[in-house]
Image (cartoon, rainbow, N blue to C red):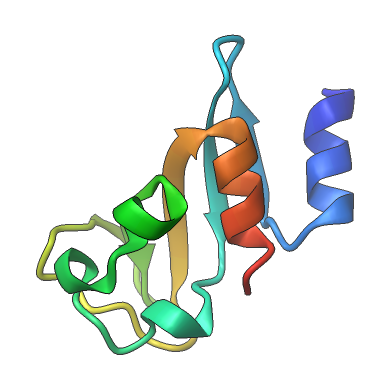
Length: 93
């Protein structure tokens, strides 16, 4: 619990779930570098080592992200990956 709170206070994460085996799911805002791009062409996984698994538009619920999902400014995203990579990604916002 202490590590989770430290992540939330230190970075720009809105929420974080970390497992014992160096895996985390992080709720965060999308960085400017992926806004307006389909996830499949954004290079998120290649450049940052994380996978965007869900997107929430303002006033709507979360939906599963696909390669065709275009992330928009104001969206909230959930990314999954190794703990340090999810931390770094959330710091890009």
